[in-house]
Image (tube, rainbow, N blue to C red):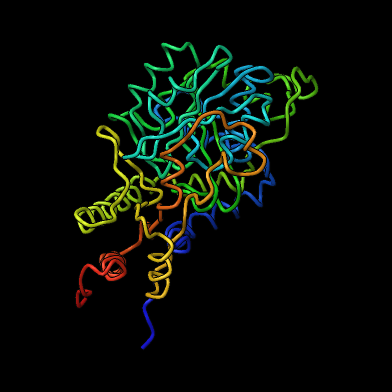
Length: 376
């Protein structure tokens, strides 16, 4: 008998939810030929700023550019250090280097695997200009403690919210707490385009204007021909803005579905030898990923695959162990080192039904030898 497959994600289901809206808006766009910038992009920027609870959103080409341009607009570059958690996608550190600064890797909480105030304080030097707080897996760390720590050190706090669309900290939207919040709209994100895209959100009008200029070859905002800065070409195209405008009204419902699935995982696995990474009290997670830790990760992953359950690892090789970044390692990072061999990302997507969640939980408990699968 064939084993029912549980996919890691299902982007096609999300696309079906918005397909008719997107097709109509694309048809209108084809008639207008306004493919770069224009009304759809401006509408998305207004909508996304409002959703994030800030006055300004500047759309860019992708999430990495969002981080790099935020750093550049803050005049952070050569001679400066930027603290980043070692447990993150490599783009966080990559953007620091592309801006001309030096990444300094910090360890993370053993419970949440996110940056802590102690991690900042251990990494601060006289050259530290900023810290990038990563809301990995769609969860926010203790932003009160991190903000206080950054303030004491006199450094800028930037949020890498690439996985945290719809997440909150004590009711405040992800991206609205630091000086700038940086998002990716890669297709697999909770709010994903049909290609690459990104944005920076901020309450700082001057910062928003500089980023808007830098993304467009350093042009003055009131002149097409005057270039005031050395910038780059990182503009969100209108066809992606159409998709994002169509999906944004559904984001809250999709986030509620993700939280419900995560709660079921947490309840089913909470007392066992592997469990979901903890959520910081005060964090309203968006659950871009549902991550467990298990010491026998590779075997568990193989057995889940044999049972038809797709999983991923985010991320098996920490940033500071990647060849181009090893030279930036200064201190021991025991939590990141240990957890890299234990983390496993389970299937989670808004259209995942209860039966599929049960299939995953049963497959895990069988792999761990805890009990026989339930008959569902």
